[in-house]
Amino acid sequence: MPSTVQFASCEVKALKPEATLPAKFQRMLKQLDLKAMFEGRRVAVKMHVGNRLGYTTIHPLFVRTLVSAIKESGGWPFITDGSFSIPGGLARGYTEEVLGAPIYPVAGAEDKYFYEKPVGYRSLEKVQIAGNIADVDAMVVFNHGKGHGQCGFGGAIKNIAMGCVTERTRGWIHALMETEFKWDREKCEHCYICQENCPGGAISFDDQGKMSIFSHNCRYCMHCVDSCPTGAIEIGLGGIRYFQDGMARTVKTILDTFEPNRVLYVTVLTNITPLCDCWGFSTQPLVPDIGIMASKDIVAVEQAALDSVDAKNFIPNSLPAQLELAEGDGHLFERIWHKDPYLQVETAAELGLGSREYEIKEIE
Ligand code: SF4
Ligand code: SF4
View: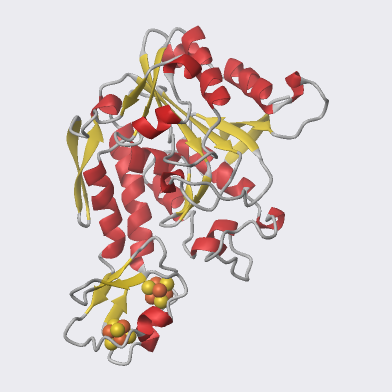
């Protein structure tokens, strides 16, 4: 059975406010049975408010619209994001006055309010689930869809796995990728040929001559491995999958703390930039705005969002310096980041979190 994904398109068919995205989003929320999900419950609205000079996160108008709909359904919403993102978010307009709901750091102001749960996947033994997620009855995972250097795409899975945990847990998940990088100090002659041949600028050496590879920028091209005259570098391709599998397993661990029918996933596909909002700055959108998708199935909404980002619509010259669009017919994000963004969706489906088959119900 395909899952339903509600879709409000950015397309404007008449020159009146009712024909534009915010009004369609209001109508979408009315069609979802929010009362059954949220009435009488505290509802965490987990979003990514970005950092520093970023201006392409979800517009406060959409946040306020969602907050109003939750309140109308009888729920008590609050906005939340990573503990250290909140001050910057407030400075850029995500305030209670604007949004209509308070905004709280997800694991407390010092990132120390959490509950540990076992995961048992490779080096990821456990995760620290943020207290403001583990302690609520219901949640809206409110995602800005965009590219992501480590997993290709940042949507609902990334928003939960990286955003509903402590900073320490984010480090543990990232480490899943880095376990596949090996550098042998004994063999290294410090000729720096690897660095010269690295198209992603991912290789650096510290003052003591220790080499490291920044997984975000690594394209797994193997130029460093192939060009090293002494065979000092080894890179296993498994890291791409381990990272995305680790995220999907973290998501399952977190979602298991909720009763059925208590979590809604909403993905805003506007300002689809190549980099995650955590970078703290904005670059141009890669494709024209698409719209907003919502579903009670995380796998379906993630699959639909990824499918909607069509490489044919790539806006020429929209990539910032240092990034390139590779030739080929892969997904747009894979051609930029050299990592298959569907792996996280595949694992989430295998873990029983939802269906990769979906049907779109478009909001008029
Ligand atoms: S695999 Fe390619 S992108 Fe990654 S560190 Fe080596 S040269 Fe750089
Ligand atoms: S190419 Fe090999 S030997 Fe040269 S600096 Fe890099 S790791 Fe060391």
